[in-house]
Length: 289
Ligand code: NAI
Image 1 (cartoon, rainbow, N blue to C red):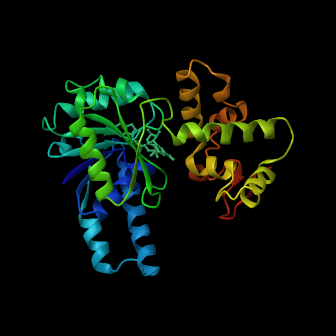
Image 2 (spheres, rainbow, N blue to C red; image 1 turned 45 degrees about the vertical axis):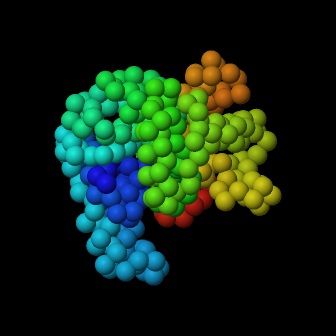
């Protein structure tokens, strides 16, 4: 199967690795050349780490890497049977990319979005054949997280839904079919996890590290909410909360927090910028005073 991935950032590069490991021929496209170089370098590092851990050998590394090519034009995805978009979480930008992409690909190519929170119906509406559009939502990091939400829009055909479920299952992932509602399942459940933690911090009840520690040691979570927001990226996480809040007609349950807005505006995006709720600049995780 030929797979086109649009956006080679955190999610796109991870999804490319998953598809290539499953034996697909992947073309990874980004409008930013630096992002493509970064994705290539990052895959090299990941492959070497997997070799060190004894999970793969040099042949497997070569097989996976040979399955991925890095392309700098959307048109290069013309021979794809499935495309998965993982660009910036902005409806207008996604719609423009989808409508251009459709002019290049074959009529039976599935056009999917990895959006965390936008309506699949509205993305599908940018296509001449909206029935070929579906949400295929991976979690971060895509190669490690088992769950993938598959979200049919009201326009999505039964055949496209079934083919998407089958493909993602072949990629050794566990599929949950979710309705096309804001945040789908996991991102909706996660909103109060982050939101209430931010409120506890804003009310002066506890600091980031104490809240994280409590949820990990008492709640059994692998990561605390602030560690997780730093991992996801405060910009991405804030945008998702804002989208879910707006899409649920300003239901106060999903109200975004000023703390996260300010961190995002300041460029304290988390791990990817070296500083978020914690400071990662010297490699060690420590509270950011
Ligand atoms: P990112 O910021 O790491 O990567 C986005 C990439 O898209 C960048 O390399 C950028 O150069 C590229 N891009 C932006 N506009 C473009 C365009 N018009 N054409 C081509 N490339 C373009 O973002 P990330 O975190 O990978 O998120 C991507 C999508 O996946 C978003 O819709 C996000 O909501 C969703 N998502 C993110 C998760 C996360 O934990 N970060 C988890 C699940 C979904």
